[in-house]
Amino acid sequence: VKKVPQEEHVNLLGPKPANKLNMKTLLIDLDETLVHSSFVPIPNPDIILQVDIEGKITPVYVLIRPGCFDFLDQLSDYYEMVIYTASLSKYADPLMEQLDPKGLCTN
Image (cartoon, rainbow, N blue to C red):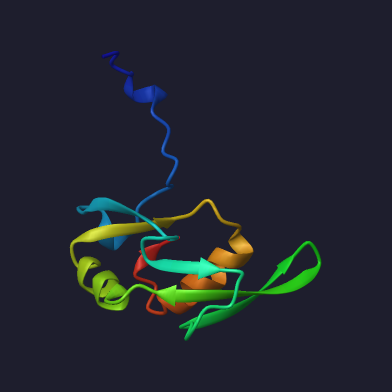
């Protein structure tokens, strides 16, 4: 194992919020962990997002995993929570506004 000098470390997440400095960071994948999203209509979606994809407004049907809100709320007392996704921000940002209305997760 090669030891990397401190000056070569890169902080890809940016600075921690002041109120989370002494907490460990918990990385959570958005899709298939907190939610399931589909371009195909699904029965009883929790959220329907209207997303502009290449100039066309496309509905995205979202199911929120049971307990998601309580999970985020309770773990925010113990961790800096960072939600990540490989999806586009024009989908992820409005979805996170609804999943995390209290702003518990780090942007």
